[in-house]
Length: 546
Ligand code: ZN
Image (cartoon, rainbow, N blue to C red; front, side):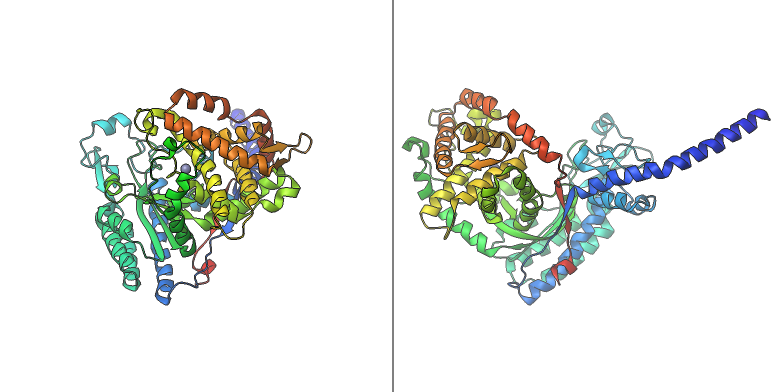
């Protein structure tokens, strides 16, 4: 009896202790989770739709509704039953963070669970049974088990079976296909009508090839629509399975025609490169399919966690060989990252006198000219070592990214001198470029882009293209030195590439492709200021005023 009373007492005391601790614990968790939510700056996804026809305006809400179905499917692919998860959460900020992450795992923090009682994320998400081992999958004789478009489940006998997406998600894809057909009826552009019709078919049979071809052939459309199972990063177990997503986009006709004009100028610009003739003897291709778009809606995979600002599609290599691929730059999404992330970083690091040179137009030009510049320079070594890519091996990507950055800046100055860019202050591009480096290496410089950025940063620093004030930590860009440094670094990179000088590139990158101590201190400082890490969109029909 005494033991029972004791146990009871202990239990009662424990209950009280737990109850007393609970609110405090929740409060603490609240603020922590709220901070995580705040790290995603909210941005309204809008665009000027005045140029669209009445029918095009009617199509957009229908396409958004179809894209929304990708949200439903992606939830099932990544977590399972969204409703039951949401029902067990009471804290509004936790709910909000679940919406941002499409599940209870934090995408920007190695998928750590942030909802009590929920364990780590299964690398295979919901594409495979959670109790499946890699060995079991490899030994299975389920047909199409490695297909991009099958879900793996257990049959009645417990053995692995594969179910095609269009069967597994039949109810959802049927609704989406109906909506896409409605939109196709309204389409005035023949290419778009054909693509939408074929895309609706593809959702119902998982054969995306004909619609991918039709998408590449479509050239005069104002509206674009990316929908279906596309990227395979969500399958962290094997990378076989594609996750559903949808983008509703409108083409920026002004920028798209600008790009076409610049592409036509590339052969002339190639001849002006600051290197001896043999390093610029190739005629640059102007066949790159590069377009500028405003995003109206993100759904599913692409809307989870970090937001992409450029799309490169299709992924099907058969289509790439036949038709190439298309790169879509999403201008308003870039503006979101520029305003919410780059501007506050610049305010800390760029000298107050030069703040006026930081602008979105310059930022966007730098990004676009980076893309165009991949086509400039030299693709084959002049030393008989085959392609530059092969000769430079794993060193190729970082140096190629640095090349595109530097030649991008070089192009801006050339085009400005040719009077192609109207009234323009090159200083805006320089200052905004340096500010952009701070943003892109903020959380490390291990990617090819990051290493390329650091090569430029260190090269510029050594050549006094900018200086750093020891006391304030502000950076000041020196126009004349910057211009010289851009030319010199362009010449250095183009020569290393043309020579296929693997060791030269390797030495240069190991010396300069790293974050210097002084910059790391600056980055640590800005990372302690609560500047957003990424974006969450306010989007949809009402935001668009439709
Ligand atoms: Zn690039």
